[in-house]
Amino acid sequence: MSDRTLYKGFTLIDGSGKAPVENAWFIVEDKKIVDIGQGDEHPAVDESQVVDLSGKTVMPGLINCHVHITMEPVADPFSILSNESDAQTALRSAVNLKKHLKAGTTFFRDLGAPNFIDLDLRDAVKKGMIQGPEFVAAGKCISMTGGHGWSIGKEADGVDEVMKAAREQLKAGADLLKVMATGGVMTPGVEPGSPQLSMEEMRAAVVEAHKVGKKVATHAQGAEGIKNAVLAGVDSVEHGIFLTDEIIELMLERGTYLVPTLAAPYFIVKNGVEAGIPEYAVRKSESVMESHMNSFKKAHKAGVKIAMGTDAGTPFNLHDKAPYELKLMAECGMTPMETIVASTKNAAELLGIDENYGTLEKGKFADFLVLDENPLDNLDTLFNINRVYKLGKLVE
Image 1 (cartoon, one colour):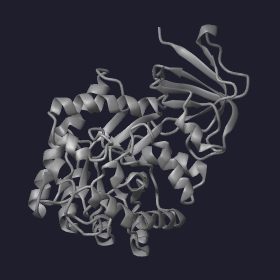
Image 2 (image 1 turned 90 degrees about the horizontal axis):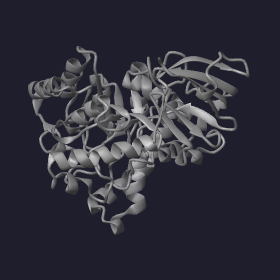
Image 3 (image 1 turned 120 degrees about the horizontal axis):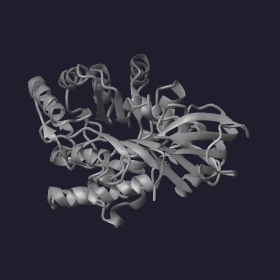
Image 4 (image 1 turned 45 degrees about the vertical axis):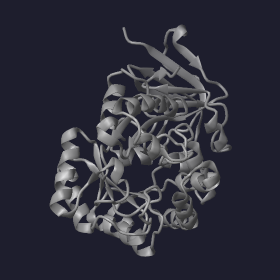
């Protein structure tokens, strides 16, 4: 016999952006919400299966659209990755998975890992072998030879090589592709503003992904590279540090998402070389941080679709601190409700999982957070979550 559990008495923020509902209730059965409503009238269930959440706020679990689960958020994450076996990387990553889940991230998207370790971890979570959020994963990021992320990616030059690299990721079981449109902060010898893969090269990856119903994310920081990626047809721009009015118009026309990852340069600058972060990464972060925040403000004001992502795994960008991204988005002009929608409904839509996740409504999976305070009044309550439920089960 299946368990039917009634949760009642709470303030509901359902993730859709609608006003909170006081004295709400829902019934969870077989991992899903099977009934939902407001008030003291609700279907009868066994008394032992009633959870009274009076005084609490309930919202969907966070969905983080930019994570590197295999990266350890130390001063130089690549120094660890390049000096351990795949088995060590997988075991360490399993610890990171648990951190995400216990801190309220119930689903995420992994955007680049070595040797398909991310795909094995994804499958292990699905099978119940290890505990963590469910996630979708890109396999190896596709970069030009010597381009950003080359050390954990797949190097490819020219349309044919990129097409083959894309097919290799899909063959291995990647849920999406990630292409590198520009240089970046964490790779020595490349600059964040410089274009890397060309529009034609990225278009080859987009065609391969889209013809099998999968999406493409792009690491894109400089204006020329971002424009190339948007024109190539990518589904999301990650970082988007140097956005122009023209690029914003193109993104609006095409429905391209922005995943800002404001936390990534923020924590590099905050900790600096004194914490052991490589000088080149600090220098580059300092040079882009203001532009990054200004680009986010412009995109948000213009109505670009924004989904939350932290780039967890970069220096001091911890696997259990996603709420910092919501706070930074709020500092840059979003309302608290907009930050929550970006972290739930919008994120689920970008990941293509919105049929089952992202909002709390009848028929969707019961991934939800129980909070002591209303995050619309105080986003800091997300750093101290009362309880996390994943697929209807309390996370211990």
